[in-house]
Amino acid sequence: MECIDHDDELDLSSLVDKTRNINVPIGHIIAAQRWKNSELHHTLQSNVQVLFEENLGVVDFFPSSKIGVIFIREPELVSFSGQKKKLAKLRKANRVQAIVLAEKTPTSSQYYPEVQKFCIMDLGFNIIPVPGQNEAASLLAQMVVSESHMNANPFLKKRTYRVDEALLTTIRSIPGLGSLKARTLLEHFGSIENICRASNQELSMVIGKAGAVNVLKFFEKK
Image (tube, rainbow, N blue to C red; front, side, top):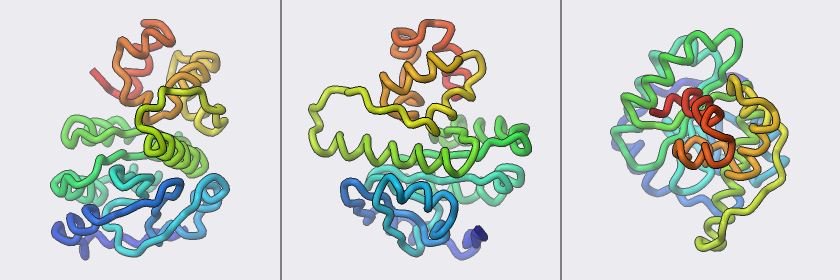
């Protein structure tokens, strides 16, 4: 898939207006038109309803009206300067909760720490590494499912969802964690997004102190 970079055409005012007016129907995800017919799109549409829109600006996906997801592909992770400018604009707009998915592969892994540091330390964005587009699609679908349950009943207690194998693959990539603890984490928290937000104490109660340290280190949370 060829992804056209509209960074030079993007101004902050249009980005603010667009992110302010996004309304995502429950059980759907809004995606930028540039992702249509991509590998990610084909995987995603088997799990949730996908709506495409032009001119979403920096954001690639809206799994809900409050969350904007930016997917940094392997080539963009290697050459990060253009993406850095886009992310900084999104932070300045400050209209949505931004989550960054980064395609961390053997080729791009050496560049990931710098991108991770910029997202977390400079922008305050959550960043989640994924091996590829299929895993990114599964994570996006899980965000939609989680949001749908929250909207259906905001007082609903956490429940155990069927573990998605692609999501499990992503969690297994955390050094020192192992398959059993990876599955336990997903069964307890329901999504990688919730794992990323969890505190040291919350993680320790589920997978022990050593496991919690590994997870926090992976997501660079102090």
